[in-house]
Length: 481
Image (tube, rainbow, N blue to C red; front, side, top):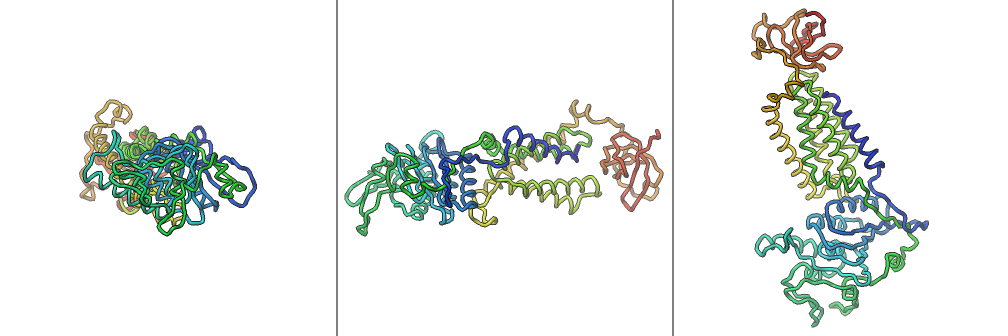
């Protein structure tokens, strides 16, 4: 069954694509303004909690905006907040977007907490009537993080990123910091907008109010203005004649979000299945399950925009090299090491993606760290359970029923030391393992490595040595008892 792992993965990927996804593209793009134009506007709805699934949607949308030379990207925002790590990743994606694309946020009710930080990472902000923005303090799963060095460490890092985003997008960095820190007072001249001990939150009127800066020039506090609808924003920015596409989350993406969340478990299960398959000749269930788990792993990462065809090709080449090393070439050398290396590379690169518009080799440090953690955790789990399986699996009744019990009482593992012990042409023996084409046989009451010539030989079949080339012993199946 070892040589069927690639076929199992391919079949599983085909089934997933056919019955769960049904398309090769990963986002549904709906034309909300089908007006012929040379410009393209991509709208990304941000509704509900900010979580990792949204990160993948935004990354793919921004990649599409770069590839299709879009004029603008609009975030249609209505969120109470969400994960800080995901928020920081989204902020960096927006900050690093090429200057040829103008980014907008339409605060369509609430841009609170993480939503406010994402909003200030865009170039221009519009508010809907009755909308709010602000209150971006870091909180834990059970509420506000306790005071102390740990909290200050997280807050300082977030404030630094937020101020950098505000300065890049020409917003007031002090205003943004007042949304994050309670111990800060924010004033405009003599007017105190937010007192110490409070988090700054602005209504649409506050955010759109006109103030005079230090040079005496008038500007709005944060938002460009208030508009009733997204179409009104397009009209105000002279984008109403553009082709507008709205990103919609597919069912496959929702499923893939959870696959990515537990990706290290799927990866560990896949690697463990392959390991057990190679350690137990003739036992095909681990290989089947391992192939399915790896197919699910790559499919999930492909849907969320991380894995592509290159990673699958690398994995296939690595597995082929490993099979050749284990089944054809005696010993374990360069071919096997290269195969393992390609497999690990394919898995590693399936978990990272360059920043949209950046060179392929410019990989975000946070993604690299995340990929290394997942890969390390998967290898550790696979190794630990692999050791347990090697020790206890052969003792189980299920395993013993699936394996052919050959009497090996008279078979020795001692190395051949004399010419008389060396197998010669014409000697007969019994296959200890399945030979597909390489494996082990009992010859002259010794366990030796052999290679089948022609058809594969099953475990327990009688065989005869047809050729000896140095340390390479060639055998053929025989019907003689």
